[in-house]
Image (cartoon, rainbow, N blue to C red):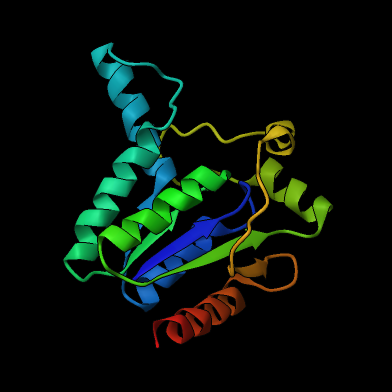
Length: 173
């Protein structure tokens, strides 16, 4: 199974992904970790461009594909802002001949979302988190699928995890 997460920064994707990875168990592919590793490598070896484009997603698609073909459950944790990235994740599942489910996280309370953005600390070494203006300016296309939408303004992380697990189990059956 490929679990495709998406949502703006600060809405709780990585918190949910980590909880799901521990509960299922599943492999957690975190785009922030992959992209920061690429930035660090570029800085250390003086190659490439510190402005990561599609490289992080492309690496994650390959890693996810390798692991779903082995029968592992994989959680793809990324903003996943564009239809093209969502289509690419679905293609990973199809090529790996596995089921997939999509979960979009939102935070319907703008003040709470802003507070999270302004006060959070990255658990990814060297990762510079976006500020509130960057989150507001982020290109983010509407989803047009049967994704589960979870609102982190209404439920805590444990409740969100339970809702996601129920959805994942339902999709798997």
